[in-house]
Length: 194
Image (cartoon, rainbow, N blue to C red):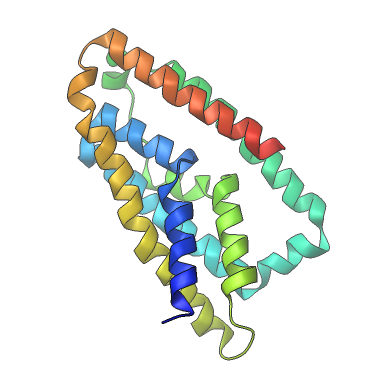
């Protein structure tokens, strides 16, 4: 249990603090409600599951051997966050009716470009992955713990968006909210480029 506590604490901090996934969850909850956020929640967890498993079973060694690959992913992820910020800031109350929430597949694939997801998966593989024993079983245990801790955090962010939805019935207020969420993603993109 004493070995699991630091892992669970790390997963909680990485999953509950603001980041691209959580900004998208709050925005999706506010614009499309809980039902609209569900595919996003499940897609994030599926993407993180695959990403963490791959890191734990050995993909992390590729980034150690080829640091430019990690840098390229970080740049691509940051550029994608700039694109998401632009899309979010352009959303409006009228546009929300025509627009669609992020799909399961889009959310899962986004994890491959999400710098915060890479940081979480790399740290879990390098710091918390046991050196001995069955690699696959250890990787599965770490990955499942990440999902068990991360899913409620994702749900919390989506519910935050749902809870403020009634405040955004005025198109101007929704526009300000979407601009603010877009600005947060833009700041995150710049931070990940450092």
